[in-house]
Image (cartoon, rainbow, N blue to C red; front, side, top):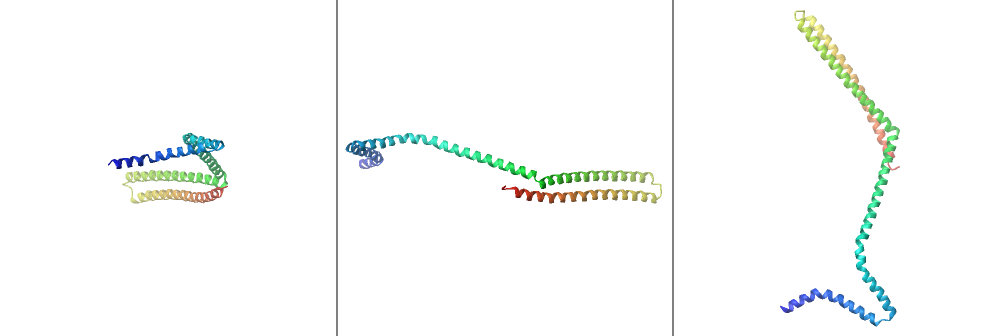
Length: 196
């Protein structure tokens, strides 16, 4: 057992002994060399002795390098943002985009008009229907022909209201189709601006 412990201890201390042995060999050679060689050795020794300081400075150098990369990335990001802003401005100024905005406003206006017409038509139809119901109740004693005439008036009124709503809806559809065409042209023109 004593041999094993000594062997393990030798294995653990061997690297240390090797370093000490190298140092001893260097000192021996330095003593054997002339003064110039000793000066060179001293320079090398000084360089070796400066290594720990250089190693300690590595984190600061690494941090400075990282900061440099971060600064470069920030600058590149800013440049790209300016480029993108310029592209968006050019696209907004192009005629097809401005035409698209006008056409879209027109379509929205047409849709609002269609909704208003539909509401008014529905209200008129409701009013006419109430009137017909009132007429039918109050004139139950009158002949059936009077009720039929009143119902025909309601039917005509409802038909006219539906026709007006249909006309407005068609106009809105046409406007929406124009908007879609203008949007396609604006998108095509915008695609041409990319990379300018």
